[in-house]
Length: 246
Ligand code: PGA
Image 1: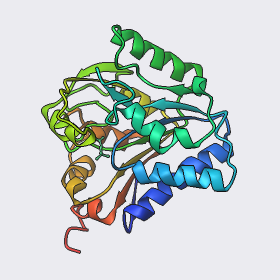
Image 2 (image 1 turned 120 degrees about the vertical axis):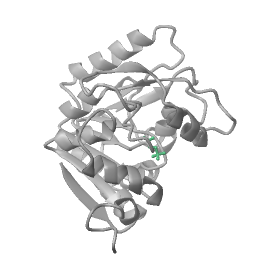
Image 3 (image 1 turned 90 degrees about the horizontal axis):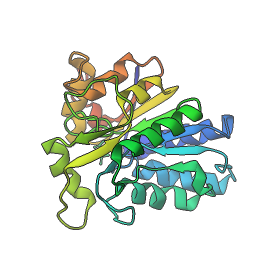
Image 4 (image 1 turned 90 degrees about the vertical axis):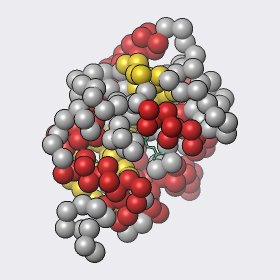
């Protein structure tokens, strides 16, 4: 694992977009797993802009969504699916069959997980995975206490995720469960970028980098990944040892 620190959110986002573009240029049939959330929003807009400006062909890539709120319809602006379509996929020419989302309205959530696992396996794994980090150290909806060895699964959301998650919705929304890829997917991905921005993430980033690796902070799992990068802006990095006195 390597830590990369960027001056601000904009430069962090540009570097993340560059990683996506480079991955697709090098391997036009790559499989990418993308998180939704406030952190990657600008990176996806920049990716869409660069793809259009430079005629980069995304049509043979496969995209897998990292997670979804159970019971939330895909046309709800707070859903992960809506987010990824709105900021990225709607701007690129990608066949629908190459986009994989959890169907959060399915009556058979386990089958949804199996479908995601199968889709990833059929593609020979994930080439590039972009994840954020929750205020509680979650990655996707791998909440504190969960094993690192899981693939896609259904989760009872942590209280922090239920409260923080309200920011994505126009109205107060009942959130209780999530569908998520597992940390094992992340550990098997060929390259992983964990991105974090802002002072509000500085505390959990410090724990992620400096505390013991283990399920209490799911994001610590990236420290065992040989091609894992924790990409931070200065604010998110500001509590790390050696930087807090700057
Ligand atoms: P955020 O979410 O990018 O909106 O901060 C990150 C997460 O909860 O994983």
